[in-house]
Length: 181
Image 1 (spheres, rainbow, N blue to C red):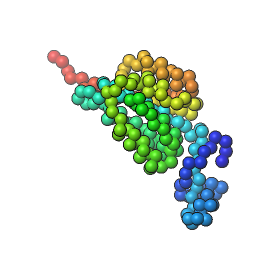
Image 2: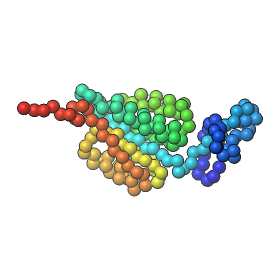
Image 3: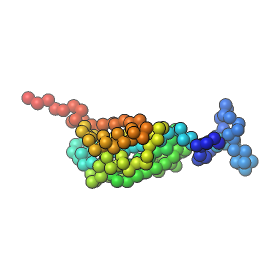
Image 4: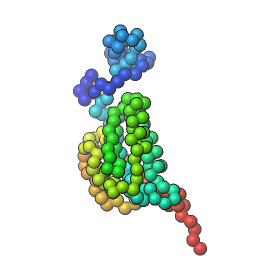
């Protein structure tokens, strides 16, 4: 392994894999060819902050469940792609490194345990995330249009070198307001 590489699991050998990556000790015990998988620092980090404010939970077309589903898909994709995921929502944090179904299952369990309507702000959840490096992607999932506090927290992430995205979740009424008159 090179510098910045951390062992985290195995996967089945596939034609074209570098034979130097085969775990020969495991092969001797199991007679199955498995390749050691490693997480490179360059593999990246996904930083996710999910807005759990009252506006995400109340009224027809509540937006918190779609926000959790979106975060679930983004996080699962990153984990299956051998990336690290750091998430914060409603004053709670989660951290996991890619590798398999067990980690993705824990990620989805965390998301299903979240509740909206608490007192934590999106900005405080963004600040709760660990420092970002140059390989980090920071995504905020919210319904807000005016985010002065969160914008400052996102600016701090950008100064750390993270690339930023804000995904706005809208209810049907917000997307297609009824015609008046």
